[in-house]
Length: 318
Image (cartoon, rainbow, N blue to C red):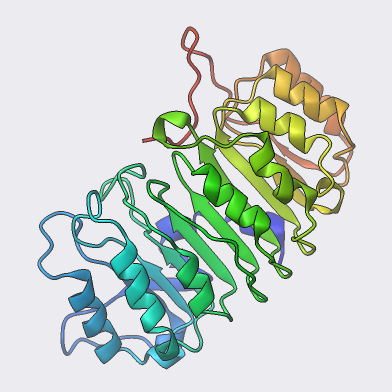
């Protein structure tokens, strides 16, 4: 896997593709469908005023599509997802795992903002998704409210992403305590305390040690209101020397955090350093640009923001 390329195209879901496959939804009865293994299948009902339950829609999907060939699955909305937590869709997927032997990529709760604000999505324990799909290679989860992840061992997972306006500290600890020997790409939007993101330095310790993540090549600890503190931890983290790309983007990174990155261990071995959406001064942007000039590091310092008085904002919160 080219981790920098994956980082560039991780938003493919919102362009109409996922895991390298075109996104297709269940079509009306009698309408033709592409071969099951040649599409990323979106299974979703309307969050508001749903005409059928998620369980009913899922049943129609499994009756219509040869699920034994499905390689990529996108679980979108379920009825009243802003107040009904996700345990029922999780349980339904877990109980149906034997029907999806080829499944390798799964995005759970992939609801765009117009369907449900990210902080409104009512999540639950997603550990059964990993326990029930031991061959899964890619798991992405959107929404942090009510989200849980228990420590787990998974031999084949290569990509793990959490999109949240506030990621529970227990989830961060759950990742750090999990045995993930094949994991190459880890991305966590830590968010703000206003929306449940209360991660502190001790919560990140196991991730940053890298002891349970021997294959990790990309680390993104992003979208954080404590981005300076995270940067300071990353600056001396044992996992960093083996990374190919590092993201400290989308948060409220200031000159203090950037100074920590510059004065810490060398980052010139990276292929990419992503700091976009930041609160750096022009002088610091120039220092960073100069520091990495000629190093081969693809530095992203786009999206410079100005504080609104005392207020600084992460890229994704509500």
